Image (tube, rainbow, N blue to C red; front, side, top):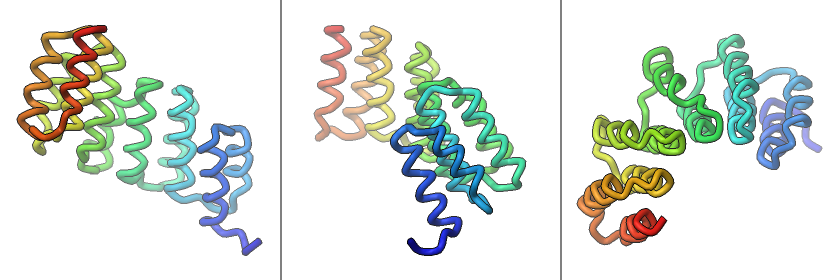
Length: 183
């Protein structure tokens, strides 16, 4: 095997996180002679996707203690993991205020998804409307999915119209609206 460096260590760590073997990931992380943003991000995302809020927060904290600046990818992972563990809202605010990372449409989509899963469809829709960038069909699709989950047919129809306005050739909003109406 080639010499172990931060890249090879992190590749092993990330592979174990990806398959959900977080115990082995922790052993690898603690054995690493040095860490980088990808190492910490792997742990935050791994625990976030498992729904383990405390461990995800712990590794996000340790990233900060080591003086490593979270990247846009770190926040994407935190926010997408937040759908399982509700870590997202405070991290979304921190991302902008404390770390000066401008949210992308992916970050907004993750937040919309997290809000929708938490039953906060109204806030999810408002977030999409107030995005500083024009919302894409995926953002409106996340609202539609939340409407289906929460059985909010009137808001689903409203979101579908906006999705059609953004991308009239996309038939996904029709399917999502139909699913919201029959659930």
